[in-house]
Length: 603
Figure 1 (cartoon, rainbow, N blue to C red):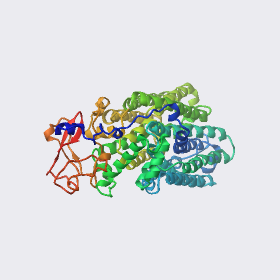
Figure 2: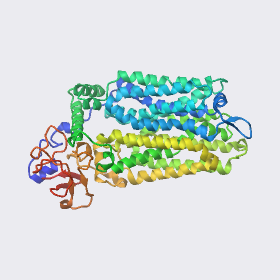
Figure 3: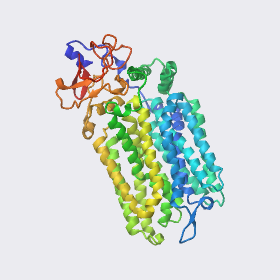
Figure 4: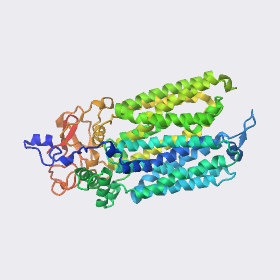
């Protein structure tokens, strides 16, 4: 390293990142046509279909609950005032919420299944599981619990795809479109919701089971496209490399970038995969699950991801998506299905400017101001619903209902531009590669857990406190803005290595926008660091403000006469008279030098 060489009084080492041009990413000349080559568009469309499947299933259940034939077959009570068929809270909550229980389990199972059998086969398998759930639902005649069980089975597929979709895209897509493709997952969710709303609007007047079976049957199209289409794409190069299929991985990377297999960008990415895999396996073949809590700065990041995904649900967006038709019928609007279509259209349309906003203004400002905006919208919506809307006959205050629709649209716009897509991007960025699959599975499980809680208990809460329920969501939106302000580092325009370094060094999130790494020095990060099993091979003190001579870090010590083989791209450690992994004891500490928030090993 350059700084290490300065202390040794010698010229820069050939191993220095500054001396080896392939150590640093080479910027490709990428124009519009290269960014949106047919293969990239095909991959983005096919893989993002996992989001469309989730969005479609979410949107259609909202309309089913108000369809006459669906009520005639599965309702368990009547409205005491009108005598019309209706669902009790336990039954409607169970039908809607069992999907979320399935998604929770699917999200937790998806990562280990994909690690064993590959990303492609796993995606096809979970699409089949989703179709089985739809078959269970569509074949029922009068048994409401068959619909609920079918939604639980479908949820297994939806939850697994919610993990595998961004995982496959981030591992396979070229770096210059990686962020856009991952964000397409949220875009396709919004498109699926809108599509379901439109189909429900077209079938709700049919006086037979076709009114709800037809939308269900159309739902077979999306998993069929994804499950069959993914077979014709290549396997993730990261997974191929781990299985020893190095040439397959190299070919896939070259095809993704549209360059020859010996191109420097391909060589650099293959080397990066090798370095991370070598470092991951250096401390032993077995790295237990709990390393996501015991690794350096990992407890902080794991809990942060869980909190962000929970808060995404607690913004209250699904309050409208799951029960939108019922809600807007209660405010006296003549056709609540039309209102749902309007909300869905706003959701899709405002997701596009959201992709621009996050790249223009960054993650932190977008999430903070988005949270404040949504808080304001819910305060107005809830206040009008509780204090101004005529609860006995909403048609007498229909203008209030229209104003509530306007603020609901403003809320959906804020969510679609900020907390909808950006939380997925942030959660995908804050973890090092070796822990990303497990941490994302846990964070996604948090999302589905709160999805279930909201979808199940919403009918009970609305009956108890009516539109004041919105004040709860307003408080959660405000809390979300505060969590981002105090705990999330700005990752806009930074490499994954730099993001990892910021969390390892404890960079103040409030000042993280102005943090700058040295230009010619290798960054300390977990993917290139040797850790013993359990990730306790490093015990870092808070280096910020600590004198150089007092900064110590316990690391796994080199083997084979104090040298780690040059073949490994992991951070090189200088000679020590030890031949075993360092156990964290206080003898033989390793001094570190800190320059502009960077840590470097010294002899």
